[in-house]
Length: 161
Image (cartoon, rainbow, N blue to C red; front, side, top):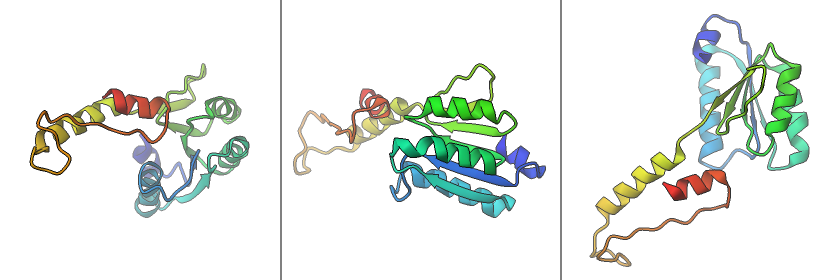
């Protein structure tokens, strides 16, 4: 969808609003790499708005993005209500919400959700397959474990996987 819109020149500005901050060498940085790729391949101007897990920044960051950008990518975990409110004020923008499902009655927001538990399950299968009993700390039953870094819906999905 985005590449089609961008290839026809409709979008000139792209914003990436994240609830956390860059430098995690994981989720936020991989999204940023995609934004950089959009800049390089389609010549769009892009801005990253980092909220640094500060709820007081969620609303103003979304508002800044909405006023400036044509396409807004949002990792909205923790500020879904703010996203719905601001998206309804700017219905002609393209809103892409990543990693949570935000249901708005006007259908303005497109949500991209992941099946973390399926990837985690496969990682567990691979770990069990490659575990060898002669490795230090390994058990003969090939029982593996995991430690979640936080207690939230995403980490719980990983653990259930």
